Length: 203
Image (cartoon, rainbow, N blue to C red; front, side, top):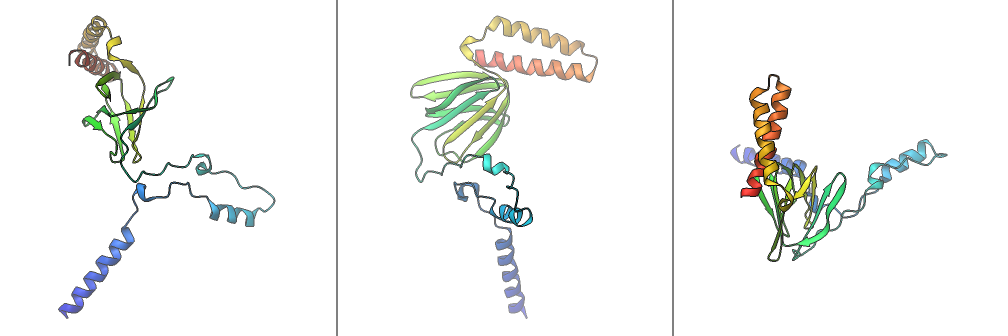
C-alpha cells in the first residue's frame, strides 16, 4: 500500500511540473509568431474581407540571444523629446534603480528596473560620463541591449550647484508650510529630486 501511495505521489508531482512549466523568454523563437489560427478562422467566417492586423504584425522580430557573451553592452538612453544615446557600445552602465545602484555588464540577465532620481554612469574604457535622471525605467534584454527611458537626463557637469541649493531650500520651506496632502506631496517630490541632485554633485 505504501509503494502504491509513493508511486501515486511521484506521478502527481511529475504531472504538476509538466503542467506548470513555462519557457523562459530567452527560450522563445526570435521571430514573431504569426497569428495563423486567427487568420484562418477569419477567412472561414468572412472570406470577402482581409483580416485586420494584430499588434504582433507591427512588432519587429526580437533579435536572437547570442550564444556567447558580447564584449560590449549596447545602450539606448531615450527621453520624450530626444535620444541622448543611440545604440552606443560601452563596457558598463550603472543605473539608479529604486532598489539601489544597479550595474549592468554585457550578458546581464534580462531585467526591468524602475529608476529613481539619481546618477546614471556610462563607463567606456577609462572614460565615465554621468547623467542625472529624474526617474524612469531600465529594460535590460538578454541580448546585451539596455534601453533606458527617462523623463529628463542632464549631464552632471551641466548642473549649477547654486541653483540646486536654492531649489532645495525653497522646496524644504514649501514642505514645512504645506497644509494639504497635495501640497505636501508636491513639495516632497521637489525635496527628493533636489536632494538627489545635491548628492550627485557632492558624491
